[in-house]
Image 1 (cartoon, rainbow, N blue to C red):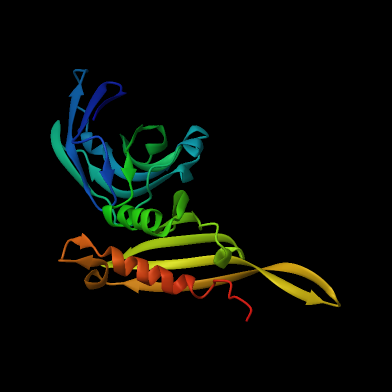
Image 2: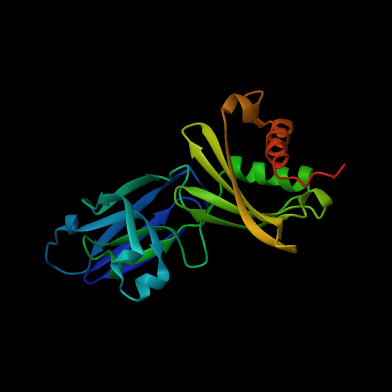
Length: 243
């Protein structure tokens, strides 16, 4: 992926190795600066940064639209760069996500904003695939939350889940462990003064999986264990038959 940025009299040519990345991967490349004037310019006024950016806020010149995660000072006319994406970094959304920003230090809002196409880690993608293929769940949406990814999930239309009006699953990598936070909204039948009604009740559960649990043979996802662990949580909210 290549991009060019002009900040007269300087021309910045940015070359990024690759077109897309997953959470936890390295974004690397090189930058070349050409000075189109006869005057010497201090390049260290400029930086190349890995940021989380919100384009709508940037368009409004709102400084809160850019969160700098890592900054590299430009010191030479040609130099390489390498940024490590966090295991829980936000994935790319329609108007926000990870960006490489080139510009004058302290003035990044007016700099060059290069969007990175970042998708969920292979671990997260594989787990959601297991839920869809083996448990007949449907992932309605997946979006970044604070240091996690939140999946809104639609459960199968079976009697056991008729009381569930909403199911959200947050996935967070904690070192090598995977933390799963379950949030259910349950419609509960109430009898008050002889009148039958329903009210919403929230139920939360948390489980943590170690690599020895979610991996088999050291590298492949342990699909059976994932199904077993998620099923054990669902058992807590299923509608029980009246005997």
